[in-house]
Length: 497
Picture 1 (tube, rainbow, N blue to C red):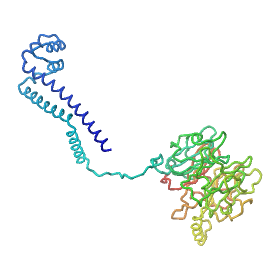
Picture 2 (picture 1 turned 90 degrees about the horizontal axis):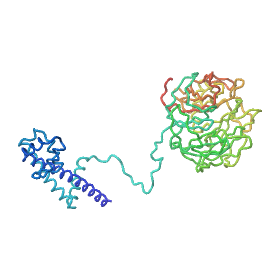
Picture 3 (picture 1 turned 135 degrees about the vertical axis):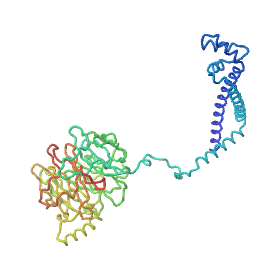
Picture 4 (picture 1 turned 180 degrees about the vertical axis):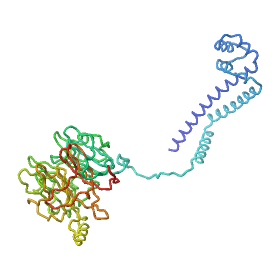
């Protein structure tokens, strides 16, 4: 490497010296012609006076045999002004010619001596060291034979990911949507295709593996940064550009995974009520064409997928407002190619509406808080089940109002609904609390027209299981509530819009 560097420096010095030598020789040639002209000034002036133009004057000076001028020297003489015809100016030209002769001699000597080139290389290196003597600010590490991958240069930042019913996906910065008050119209999530609506709205990180579960029970995987970043008003890109989806296949649930932990599971729930628990490790290596996540019965489709641990609780709700809360360890871990068990006995024309998880570590902390509130005459402490109906109504119900019940039951009534409206979503809230014991979470509501409203959970009143709730979002021109998502209040600073 040193030898290659020295060869390169020698080549640079040689090219530079030859360039300077050609310039010095050309300049010396011009100066010599000017000195000849100044020594024969009267004859030169007479020749110029007898000519009719610049070209003729140049040709006459070149033909003057006693001068021996070249064309370039003749042109240089013609360009001299009267003020340079003094004896002092002649001395300056003579001194410049002598200086050029010395410079030409040194350059020729340098070009003919490798030793002089090495001495110049050393001298220039010392000058660079003196001039740029600041210590290195970067750290050089021995990375072995590993190669730099694309993910190594991408910051693991927080991001918002949206998915529409027709399979258009995009990621946005967390501060895209400002916080709004309950009952406002909301801000549009962006341009939507004709007859398209938003189905998923999640918070994840750039390095996360995003698991895409389709209605046909197939799961696909891709890194979050593979999704192009878009503005709020952009429509996004179709998922078929990222995933190998079959014709008519739709993505119904997306799960961000940063690490495939051994004690973590995925719980899957279908529209007709089949529920199944599968180890998260079963999805650590997913081929590009996707793999089977659940075996579906004819006419059924996979709709909800959530992460859980054995000690967590799972809450499932139907479109008629019926709720079952049970422990995840009551579900036996199954393989990917199974259909699971029945989660709830559904009445005629009823289907499943939502599913959410209550993590075990948070249950203990919230139980202590609830006991302290109960001692002060309050039995409305966290956690709560947040109900959101298609009519835009919502409420919170204390989780303590629901006893644990087995699967394959009818369940308990969780929300009273308006006629012709169904339950849109159910969330467990109250895990992020402020100093006053109220929720710090926020809920994002998305209407069928693509309008988004983001409000504080604490602004939603706490009611009984038979309550109808309060208006969360006006839907005069926005149709019904299509989907709802729960996000942390730390996504951005709280501000009114």
